[in-house]
Image 1 (cartoon, rainbow, N blue to C red):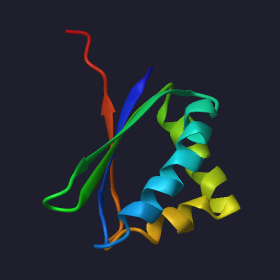
Image 2: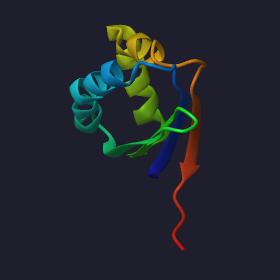
Image 3: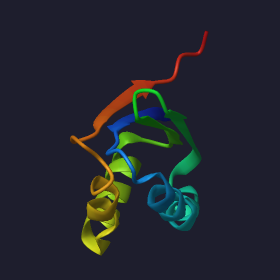
Image 4: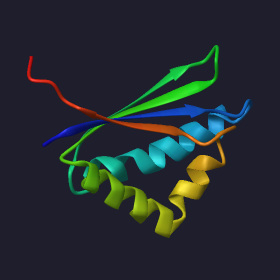
Length: 96
């Protein structure tokens, strides 16, 4: 069953340029990972929040991706742009 993954990230001030370069380099890897259907990134510049909206085949596919980026150091790099740990929500898609 497919799942929507919503990741809310509170960002540090003054890192926008570095974050843009990081996302340009790394978002294609997410999109190409087994089980990923879609990724979009949105920003609320007034509250310095980034929302990552993803569709995955399953929670386990997403968790395998998280393990992959944890093992290769990309997750730690992403966290360096954040002022607090991200909030990750797994939402089941409705058929309405």
